[in-house]
Every structure is written in C-alpha cells, then in structure tokens.
Image (cartoon, rainbow, N blue to C red; front, side, top):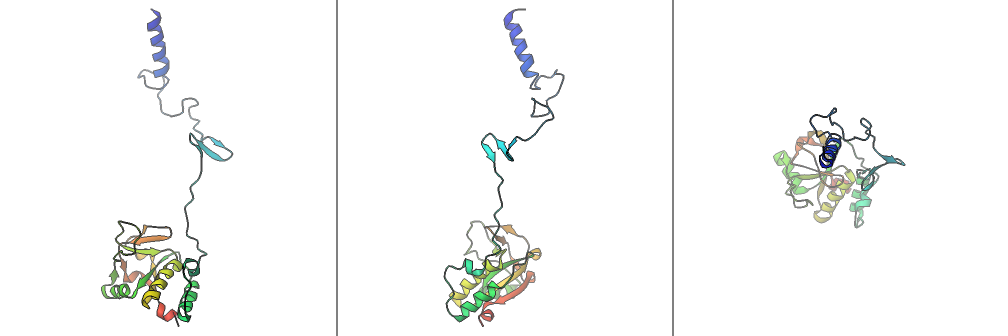
Length: 198
C-alpha cells in the first residue's frame, strides 16, 4: 500500500467515524458532546452562563410600578376643586389583579349601554394593527385617561372590568392590553367622574 492511500484511509477513518458520519462505526453519534459523552454541563463562571458572545444575562420582565398613583401619571396638576376631588378619589382606588380598567368618554359609555358591547374606534391606539379597545392593569393609569377626558369634555367614566369575562386579552404596551370588544356584562363597576368631583 502506498503512502497516499494509507494517509487518506487514516484521515477518513478518524474524522468521519469520530463524527458519527460513517455507517459502519462502532457507536452512533447522538450527542453534541463528543469530548465527554453524557456530560452536557452548561459552562458557568461566577454564577453567569458563558456563551461565545460573553456572559448571558437574565432578561427581566418589565412590570408596571404598582405604587404609582394618578398623581405620578399626570403631566399638569388638577385645576379647581372639582378636578382635585376627582384626582384624590382616584388615587385612593386599589388595583384588583382580577380586573382591568378603562377610562371612557361619555359617548363610548352610551354606546356600551345601548349595544351591550363597545369597540373602540382606535383613534388613541399607539400601535398599528390594534382594532380593539385598550385596557390597563392599573386603575391609576386608566384613571388618568378618564381624567384627561373629563378635563376636555366635562364628562368621563372609569370602568373596572372582569378579566375573565373578556373575549380576549392581548398584550400591548407595558401594563396595557387590548381586547376586540368590551361586553357590558364584563363591567364590575363604573365610576362617573362627575360624581367623584363632588
């Protein structure tokens, strides 16, 4: 046998067989770990997982700050005793984890009562492709939207809605969701801002 054929046979035997590509090998290739089969440990140094690009950091899910009140969301302070009363009473409301909240105009609330459900026209939606109504995890954040509507038109509503009675609940921005429609039977409580102004 000449040197070239011996060399080629040796290279083929020890590269193809080690990688499990040869059909007549003694073992089958079933693990990505050929150095120490069955020892698939994740490389860690000082508690962090190491990848080829460096340390892998855990991504934390952003959560809406539950300690915020409506005062933290307002850009301009309330003006007049009626607005101060509304803001102070909304600030006392507590968020329920089984509910979502929506600030609503008087026209939208009338449509809800008339048709037993309402679908937002989407004029205030910040994302394209959302055709439903925004709702919030925070009664304070939804209260800000209701308060802004009250400042502009003199009438607004804040609704507490049962999460489980909504047809769907899709994540939108931080602390916000959208749903295809808001059924009247999902509404647990309605706050009329004119009543809160007293």
